Length: 390
Image 1 (cartoon, rainbow, N blue to C red):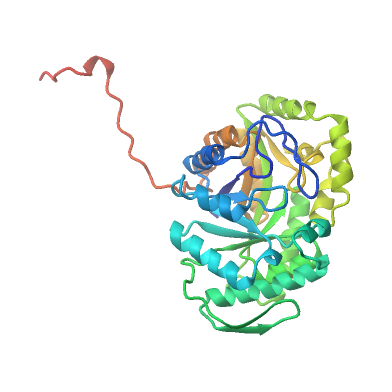
Image 2: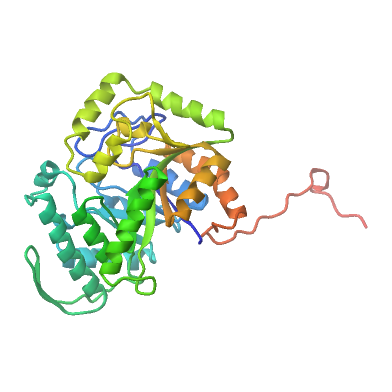
């Protein structure tokens, strides 16, 4: 198994040397570094220079628009792919298929798609979407069926419960067709993921819980006729990282991040996050219960980020060797792709890229996706500018 690593673009409130909270209906904290194109370009270039294949860009009322942001960043970076999060209810399936084709064809195949059905009804209503959660998954199923058929060059006539198209055919089909990433922990989410996803994404939980999810989705995929030889589904995990040269340094950094979060901020964030309709968010909250005294929920797995941040709330914490060990433990469960981040995201890309990835490369489980670069040998100082004497 060759593992794939992706980074994160902090368009959800910016970046900083502390945990930038927010998400799932709660306000983001003060970032320190605004997520503008100049800074996001630095993050993107750091990610591609350190061996990351793609970067996830989130979606939501608290984020910059992922399509527009990544289209801009595709022109200020070289080869990094963009895992663009988008919500099916906010755009028609034909337009989404067309947008994906445009993005893919004009960037040379640098698009991946993270389908987010939407876990918060009050936020969905801000966008004019008044369906309940189960109906949103029904619509998402119809949406992805239409999009995939358009990408297969079919002429689509479909009259569904939520979506309908007539005589739909796409002239500019994306090449290659972008892979679809899909997450969700509810029964409705599992069915849609098993049917349509190329990669099922889970937020970082202890290995036993992740193993249960992998088995659950594999069973549902088999029921859809997707066996090992028929468009097999892959698995990914979304986590933060705090990796340093030594164990002690890493945990000091985790303690520093925690010390900057006030009890009032935790209380306020937890009250907002408990209102979430997301099953995945509930599972994140259950890892710590809002308390700060038992945040290491598994060796090197720390739930402190989730005290104030919605969505992915756990971090891999430890020395580079320890983090590499834990990654391989998740890989043994079937996890092939890791969508990672750190605070700050710029420096974090270097900590992980220079510290952990070389270890995984030596162990034979990762290969840098970037083309090899020729490095000129250094010129000896004494010989510089001098003629060579035989």
